[in-house]
Length: 185
Ligand SMILES: N[C@@H](CCC(=O)N[C@@H](CS)C(=O)NCC(=O)O)C(=O)O
Image 1 (cartoon, protein in one colour):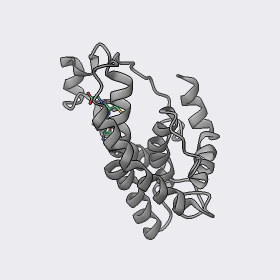
Image 2 (cartoon, protein in one colour):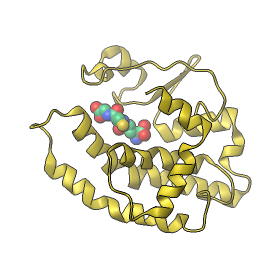
Image 3 (tube, helix red, strand yellow):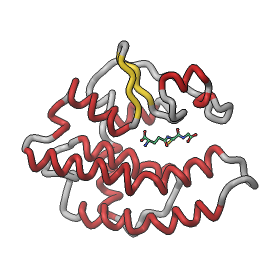
Image 4 (tube, protein in one colour):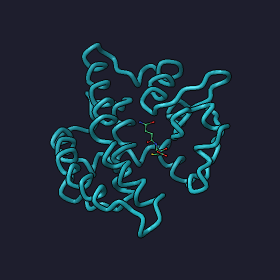
């Protein structure tokens, strides 16, 4: 989002295996002890959807949509990505990335995996014959939903039965912003 807004920024790496995200210094910024957190001058904000919306309002309002209806749908898909789509993917990500093998809650991983086909299907059906999630332009909904969908690619899930979603995700990953962030590792 910072790249899409064309802003200069500094990332502050946190070693989560060493639980730096639970340090008192970090908890002062974000009492949840979770990433991401944005510090913009004296202003601090957490929750990725709220961060992205704040950045769009301040630096790139066109990402919020050009009509009232588009704005409603952009909000709809952004909320969906956070409330419905993200939780099972983040739970799997945490187990597979941060919990050492042997200590992983594989029952939780399986439960989350079982929830995902319905979410992928909703997105795939919506993207049939569509280049973007809302209307015919890139918006905050593409950014928010793609950021979540990309977790599935990172987890090397087989998404071949969702070709429209995959095509759209490929287009999102072609964006300069995405490439710049991916190159940062
Ligand atoms: N809804 C939050 C979710 C934040 C979240 O769950 N972040 C994960 C990484 S993707 C995290 O920091 N987990 C650390 C923990 O739960 O201890 C957002 O989108 O900002």
